[in-house]
Image (tube, rainbow, N blue to C red; front, side):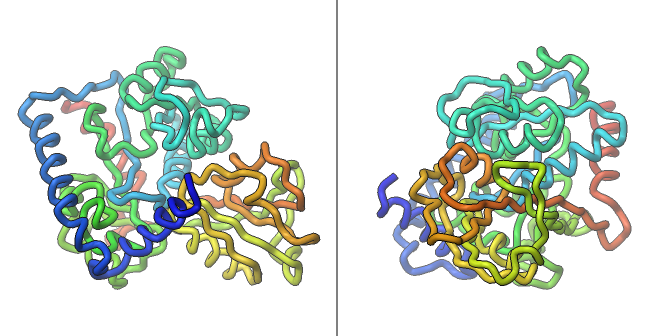
Length: 357
């Protein structure tokens, strides 16, 4: 992508996630209306049977966004896989592998190339300890995973809320503190589907958007308010980019010259997390799923690079001219106000939903 293209990609989300429609986006409204109409026709086609969803022999849990860009679904998928394993289930993960080369169904291992399988699937393969398959056709990816791992008894789909070709048993929508932005559909806004879609999901998870914030209040009429859950991403120790056995704390980095890079949906979320750890640093924000090159990592002599795990899977193969550290995070899901827990909600749907299907 050209430099001007990169700037446009970075500017659009800033406009989308304003509370009101920015004047610069007014000309895009007719395209949003067309996008809405085409999406409604597609959903209607599945509803009346003109298109058929493919049901796999095991339950499927979709963890996804209603908006474009990252909102924390990958940490949530990792949390869910860990919960399922602790409960005695044998999960697998399927994903599209956004921004990867090719469309074929592939198994993902820890040594895979992020350009071939996608950055998020590679991170999932390294962190989850379960089989991960990618494919533009998520149903085909699921069948391939089940053929290779017949003991798998539940699939977690990282993204895919709008991939109606894949039948699902549980749907979880994830939002971050930016909420639904201006509440318009693409390309005038960040929404992939109308907010009314939240009425059909089984749970909404909020990554860093406390009750009462404008972002959350904007969605009050769309979803099931008794099934909203808050997610907190807990920072762990920093891990060296090229030596996973080396760790350090934020205190070890305080007072040093630091540069933080982030090519995620909301880079400010990472920068705020570093600031909360007491660190001062230069900021470098890149578009989500940015394909890093060596020049992106150039720093002044003696500067230490800090990055997210998602960035690390793409930066590790590059010649990094300085010390570089990665900040892993772990998701914690808080109970709903009525005491309900997200995992209990998912298990109930898996056990009873599949039995009655």
